[in-house]
Image (cartoon, rainbow, N blue to C red):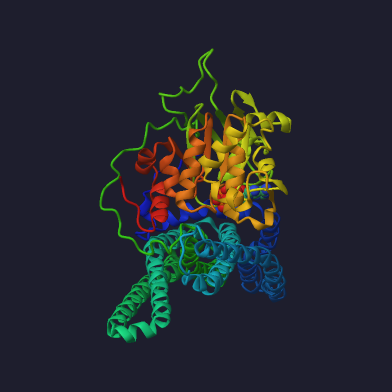
Length: 624
Ligand SMILES: Nc1ncnc2c1ncn2[C@@H]1O[C@H](COP(=O)(O)OP(=O)(O)OP(=O)(O)O)[C@@H](O)[C@H]1O
């Protein structure tokens, strides 16, 4: 997998925009990669803006030099008409741009709403972190709209700035290269000054949003508990707490306003200095043969094209850009409900990066610990239970890979937990190992045999995959349990029932030979049946893809321990910390960097794992 520079887990909490950027970037790349057609059409419309920007200044310069100053008023008017037509052409161009823009912003809005609803439901559902997700209302309404509007504004202005600036700078160069020498330095200086304010501004924006959500949450809680507060006489305390939150929100808004003022100052410098520089440099430019028309054209470029585009860009990037980053991070990034504003970890990262790999080989090699195997199996030794060699998986020809050059080696008998944020590729990995999905590149081997293209019956002999939604068919309970091993003995069946904790269900149904009506089983019971069926399967490798998500922690622990005791290898997509802690090793997928090791090792090496454990614990992560 590609290695990214190490970013500490607290980058998000300290409000550092780079942490949010790192989390958002893969999603953004995937989103844009799926819309190359729209982007190409936008670029085509925008090219017209380049021509328009070029013609406006060029027309004015030629009108003066070749027309009015040369005594040819007709020619002058003709060039001015060219400039005027260029301005008027802006209307159909903007119409085309807006038509394409909707194809970018509406899917973004729909995706964010889906994500916010999913997260809220996951929190509220049994097995989720529980509680009412009050901030969801803010995310679903206010924040999604902010994201859509900010994104639209950003695309509009970024695109307009790039294409207009290209046209204007081309025009300046075509009038006289010396004009660029005068105009470019103050312009670039202003831009750099402005860019320096972006990070602190994003941090201030994040704190303002967090304060806003905390206030909303407090108001909702207080309203719900009004009777109790009055009965217990703790109303004044709740009011004091509310007042503190209001003060905090006001302070955050003031800091934000302060940065907005600094940004406006930077905008003033960048917006006016080039004009001033051009005025001061007139004698020098005249000495270099710059004509009066070229000077007038240059002023037209500055006043008409470059500076308005720069002004809009700065306003959009400063306000919409930082707002978009912060809002997207709150909707897509780690659940902000868990840890709205944790304190930064005062301790420096105790360990440096593990031995860095040569830059040319940008992949992560994750081998089993030496006690079980070495990277390359020795002749005669048992092959690894699972082996991934430079495995890459993209769901589309031009889609960003979900897994990128991943190497992994799991020893026979090992228990590996796979963790990572939602949508990172955990199910994709299990499907690749199960052989139901072919990699775009690289090789997947189970027990030393390639799985790609293998017949279903052969695959069934190698592995069992238990997905989140367990399948139970009509028949007897015994039929269901013995499905993958029809010749199973009664003693083994009993061992599976005991081990997996199925006894209460067997009793309720009236014995192993009682008929099962799948609709009458709870999701947890269905999962237990599927797990017991996998427990009895002869295949040496067991793949559980969140297959215990409907079980309570105790039932999950009992089932996983039984499955780990079974001879064979266990690969579990974990959705609770306890599930990862039970495993021999944990594989953390985070899109740009995969880390594998024991729970303690990955806790130390992976900031994402620390974040996840913090989330699972219902509070900030602790180092063990
Ligand atoms: N059949 C598919 N076609 C296109 N994209 C897909 C397909 N299946 C998964 N994806 C995408 O691949 C990425 C990884 O998905 P995957 O289901 O492997 O993630 P995950 O880590 O298991 O997520 P979760 O924990 O939410 O189940 C996601 O962006 C998902 O939208």
